[in-house]
Amino acid sequence: MVSHQHTRKLAQPGFAVLIAEQLQQFAGTMPDHVYTQMVTHQQTKALHVGTYESSIENTLRRMRDEADAHSQFYLHRVALNVAADAIDTPLRHESHDDASQLVLRDLGALIAVRYINVRESPGSMARLS
Image 1 (cartoon, rainbow, N blue to C red):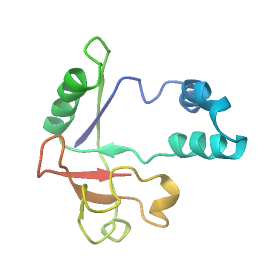
Image 2: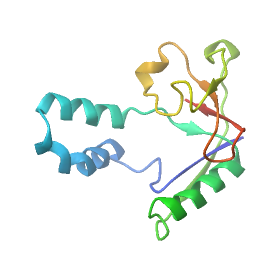
Image 3: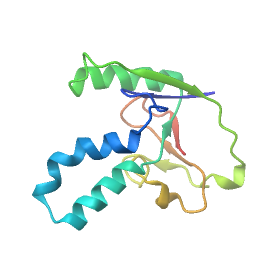
C-alpha cells in the first residue's frame, strides 16, 4: 500500500481543466506555443506515490513552507500492481537525476520510476507512476 497527498481530490472531474485555468494567468506573458507546452506539461506530470509517513511529512512541509496552512489536504491510499520489468532499473536520486518532475511521456514504456526522497522523509524511496 502506498500513499499520495494533494490539495485536490484525484478523482475530481475536470482536473486537467482546473490546471489549465490556474495557468491562464501566464497566457499573455509568453508565445502561445510555449504556453500550450507549459499547460500540457503540468497536466501530464506523473503521479508521486510513497509511504504514508512521507505523505504526512510532505503535507506538514507544504503547510509550513508553501502557504498551505489553511488548505484542505486529501490522503489517497492506493495499491499498485506493477510488474518488475515495467519499473526503471536504476534507483534515481531526486537531487541528481530526473526523478520528481517527470511527465508521462518521459517514462516511455515504463510504468514507474523509483527515486530517493531528499525533501520529505529523506532517504525513503518514492515512485512515479
